[in-house]
Length: 356
Image 1 (cartoon, rainbow, N blue to C red):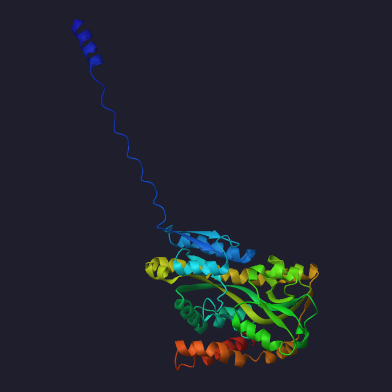
Image 2 (tube, rainbow, N blue to C red):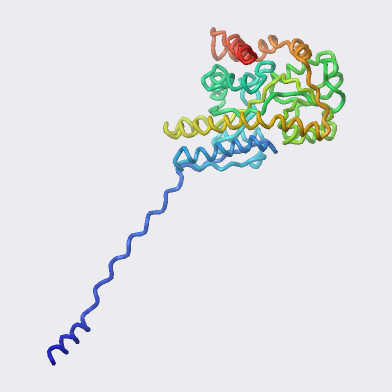
C-alpha cells in the first residue's frame, strides 16, 4: 500500500511534456509586381470609361494578379496634353488619346475624313493586322508610345446654334470649333470655303462652355458626346453628315512595353482586344438611344441623302488634303513604297465591301 502511494506521488510530481511548437505562420500573399494607373483625360464619356475600366480589370485577370491597374476617369490626373507628357516620361502607364499632330506628328492618318464611315468599316480598317494599325503603331513609336487598341465612338456630324446645315453654303459666317486634328481642320476649311466661316482652336473639354458662352457656335460632335457630354443642350441643329470617324487610341510608354516579359505583353494585348470589342458593340447599340434622346431634348436633326453628302465630300477635296498632310510623313517613313495610295486604296476597298 505504501509502495503504491509513493508511486502515485512520484507520478504527480513528474514534469508535464513540453507543448508542441506552434505552426509557422502562412506566408503573406505576394502583391502585384506592377501597380499602374490608367488616366482618362475626357470628361463624361461613360461608355468609353466602362470599356477602359474593363481593360484594367482584365489585365489583372490575364496576368494572374502580377499587374494591378487603377483607373482614373474624367481628367482626374490632368488634361489631355498632360496625360501625353506623363506617358512619354513614364510617370503614367496608360491613357486614352486623340492623336493630334502637335503630339503625334503622324496622327492625322488615324482618322482621315471621308474614309471610314460605319462600325463595320471601322472594325476592318483598324484591325491590328491591317496597314492603318501598322502605320499608327509607327507613328506612336516616333514619340515613345505603344499603340494598344482603339476606343471608337462612331461617326462625326456637325452641330450648330444658327441654322440647319443642309448644303456647304449653310456654313455661312459660323464660328467653328476645331482641334489639332489637321485632317479634320482642312476638311472643314475646304467644305466651307467662300462662306466666311472662321475656325477657333478650343480643347474638347472646354467645348460645352465655349458653345454656351458664344465663343463658337458650331462644332463637329458625336451621338455619344451629344448626350454623355450634353452638347445637345447648347446646340440647336445637328446634321448627321458622317464625314469622319472617332477612333481614339489607348497607348502606353513604349520602353515600359518593351521591358515586359512576353507573357505580360500577351496579357495586356489580350485585355485590349476584349475592351476594344466591347467598346465597338456598346456604342453601336447605344446609338439609337442617343439619337432619340437628342431629338427628345429639342435638338433638330437633319439626315442628308447620299447625294447631299456627296456634295460636301466633293467640296472637301480630300486628294489635296492627303497630298498636303499625309504624303510627306508617309514618304519619310516608308520611302518609295507608295504607302499613301496603298492606304487610300485599302480604305476604299473596305468601304466598297461593306456597302456591298
